[in-house]
Length: 417
Image (tube, rainbow, N blue to C red):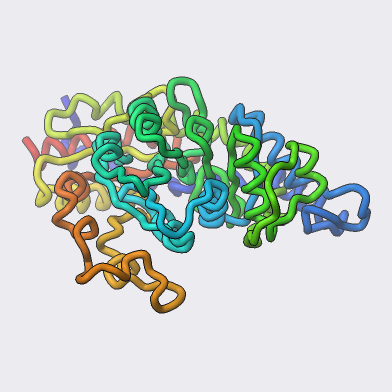
């Protein structure tokens, strides 16, 4: 029997913060090391012969953690996407498939590369539906961008099979899923190239920061050149046999100060994942059997990070009252990602670009064109208006988890039975 809501004593829950909640003496120690050496730039400092160590150490430990051959630290996750697209040679005339339900940067980074973003439906993983790849591929499709949404890997077995069949590259956006695995392999290393974000809300944070990872030496060299004005500095020349002519890259370098904090956070990532997974497991033991809740599909439950629980109600009109009661009992319901559907956002509706006439959609007679309208995505629309997100945090205790489970059970029995 579940406790009735009126029998539950309201509990003050901790913040849902992830990596930021663990910032402490380890970050302080590494930051102070950078400051005391007076070397905040990664490629040279007081000693011109020996580059400062933090960004290089972050890349080294990230490679070891992910089991990747190459990692490149950059200034944020959006820049990581732009670097990865540049590494893949994405440009004018190309098409890149991406999930319609994803963060702004996924769409805008493709636009800024000069390519055309092609929007795809999601499935109950809240990640890209693998069946969309053969449906949307054209002779101009060069890559698919996979977003491992909020700590859960997409169905990579099916996605890789469809992508290889289509002959296109796979870019994994792991901004919200560092450390997540799919069938024992860390996300970011399954496709051709992967990216991470270390923004404030992420599982590991340095405020702003990111990384590009790959097992391909040419993609690594192109990433390095893309992130540093086309240059290949001696440090990176020592990693690969140089084979790419210099081109006009951008400037997306990470500072030693960012790297110091990110390095300390990386060393805490598994602790964070274990704590969140434990909290999630306790809650799911209580609510997993509830008749009127349908839970997010997780292709590999062993590998997820457990910091956000998603469940669907049977009708959209049930969502508001359910959320109202959750918040009344102090359970957070604001999803930890600003993800939305691109067709709802102004940059998609109005085609704004940096310069007039530079949009890949200029040839369209009317806008929004087919493929960029709400009615083109019935599956996504059917999913996004019925779910509730329950974000968790690294500071949650077993007692907090049990409380959340009892509250959800009580609301379920009150409203849905």
